[in-house]
Image (tube, rainbow over all chains, first blue to last red):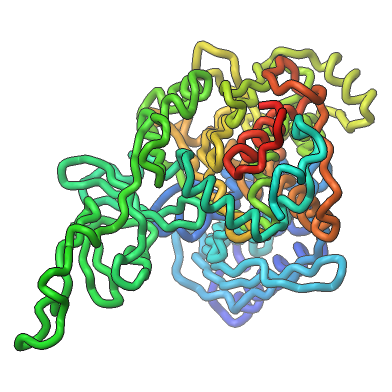
Length: 163
Length: 417
Ligand SMILES: [Fe+2]
């Protein structure tokens, strides 16, 4: 694998699948340092309600226009924020290669996130679509820009852990 | 039975849990508050800038269409066909010359007038409506609409006091401050909280909780109870302005106060300080201005993030918070970016607001089984309801309940107002 745009050989496909598998598993395990390492050194992360996305409105629920904001949000999650006590389960569909832009591959993947509370009750928390730009950096695939378009934009209760 | 005897005290310092759970109370709220002599926030003129633009919303449980007519006038119409009661306009927003019910295609103008009915004269002289059927009496019901510099309010009661009197001078001044220049919509966010809507209405009036529940505020020095600030209400105490002045305390004072209260205050530095940095935009030094308008609107400035929230009851056990994020039409791009970044602070994923969803859900859940027990509302003292120039207070909650009791017809004799 070379620096720049990821290729589309079978091996590169597996690398892409591994990236998405790790992405969901690391959030569900609350391993946020390892999760942050899946992003490029210069990266963005946005969660945008579908109703804003389709109207071209820029406001997001989570708006990290650089790694600094993303790291601040993770730190706040660990050290300041209080939220419903729960575990997450990400079910991420097969990533779909859409095209290339410069050194990045454009990739989409659908997801569902279920939340389970302390009494063992599970409910569907959200579905949506990842619309990502993925690059090769330091020998591996990284998210350069991750846009989470949220179908479930009437957010149940609150949104604390990343999607 | 819902009556004046439910109140253990005359100053609303005790509120029985039943008021958050009683279906009878919910029905009476819909009838006497939302369909009663109050003004509900509908949306913004900026959302319907052109003739034919419409947007759907709610006044309590009542679905409403807000649209701009060809002559530029704004109308608000009950979104319910006069024929069979079906919702006429199903889309969230759009542009149209008329509103046609899909069920039997009864067609209404932007002013709500019933314009046409298919097969009104029947077919070949058979069927259809009686020739005496009065089209003029079967339009979409119109709300009275009033605007404060582009913030639209509506009411279903014809003889309610004018909006400006209803708001009162301090609240009106806050709205004029927020809408001093034309606004632009940056986006929407919504949250479904499994709690009664009044727990949220109280939450926005509760200054006491802010820096305790929302630890981010104190941890990152954005807003602290040691700042100069307080609460200001209208004469009837139904609305409230929670305000604070930027940089009006010192880190030492805050550390002393929060240290004594055993609240963590380690002043962690952010990697992106812009997330909380307040850029002063006006002559006044306010960096927190949260204006709650009875029954269900909240106008919010937190640092440089600006928003309007609509509290939409969804039955006794659920509420939707519908929030519109704002900027000004003449904001330079870097200020828009600053507001979008600071939108991280508010909404369902807000760094200083996500906790509210959890707090009112646990209050709703645990209060449900014991309807005759009560909350305690005594921060800043019991008794008289009045403005405070300090922040450790929840007096405006008692103002809310006082007007609530009056409208529901359950105000006890001798109660404070
Ligand atoms: Fe709060």
